Amino acid sequence: MSGEQRRPKSVALLLNNPFLTDSRAWKMARTLSDAGYDVTVVARAQEGLPATAQDQGFRVVRVAQPDPLKWLPKPRLPDGEHLPDARPLSRAARMRRLIAASAGRGAQAARYLRLTRIWARDIARAVGFVDVWQAEGLVALPVAIELRRRAGGLAVYDSRDLDVQSARFARLPGPWRGLLERRERSWARSVDALISVSRPYADVLEKSFERTATIVMNGPPDYTPPDPPVRLWHQKLGLDPGTRVVLYLGLFMAGRGIDELMAAIGLVPESALVMAGFGTEERRYREAATKLPHAERIYFVGGVAPQDILPSIAAADISAMPVQGDTLNHRLNTPTKLFDAMGAGVPVVASDLPGMAPIVRETGCGELCDPNDSADIARAILLILDATPERRAAYRQACLAAAHGPYSWERQAVALLGLYEGLRLSA
Image (tube, rainbow, N blue to C red):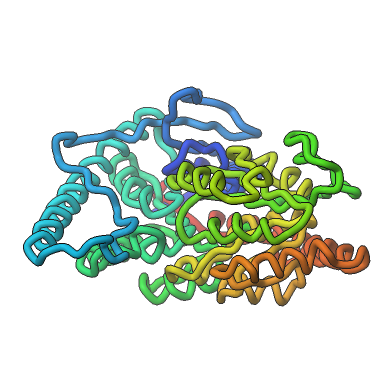
């Protein structure tokens, strides 16, 4: 009978990463799998990782991102382009640079349109038909839409960030950023459902896309941290028993206050800074750390698998996240590690910015700082480390109350499953 509809039974989460530390995708995959959906996580292929794997109820398939039109130029996205040149350039040199950059970005846009089609084709071959293609971020969004066109099903956009207002996208010249904004708006209006990670982000997206977003925050999964904590970092790094551990967990990239945090640890006696993560700027930060007088107290330990994140945080004394307000995305940011620290019962040192600050103040889960001021970051760290045992216990209880209450993953799962229960396909 024409016009009949059915509920989705299978889901593919499309990632632009190899699925090593993506805790949000891991939680979503487990939640949907536990609810009875057939779940496949589609990640990027990486040397040394299996092309297919099983992970706690769902399948992982890694597909190489294609590299079409290799002969076209490949300019980097801006990193320092927004900063003044070390030496002045002539007007002619500036014009040549501008023309070359514009031509290069035009070539990159053409390449990505081609890449999207080939990537979608390869994913469809590797995964087969699924009912829902869920894009995890802007890069995967046109791929999900192309898969819907090519293989059928529905397309869902999980907008984890304000991508066009984040990192190096935010530093693109106005015309190119405007073009990207228009493309995202067009794609987002065409999907079958929209997800956001917070109310501040959702407000921006809903105004731009003129549609309602379902909010699924990055809440922590159910976890009972050991009391007293297991000193995993002390064991792994051979630290003295009295050393206080400050943990940075996340991407190594500009705008995260990493330089300031590494400098701040030099102002905190009997402490060590554990840097857990990876990213495009990792080498630079490693080199910068070696030049500090307290370099021996800064440890780079690599990424942490999703299932190990809460135990790793629980082994620290503080989880630090001095994200800087250099972009709108960072100003409104509510990072996963904020909620994971709650779940681990570990107080945070977080930025006094519109995204995180209201949550920290409301819950009492830590202290706020000026992320651009190393001395102020150190002040906030010491407020927690030097607190009385009673005050330390109060931080812990505030974290756990928030993690088991309004910010729990259990509550976020209700929102996610409610969205999926409302989706319908033509029978």
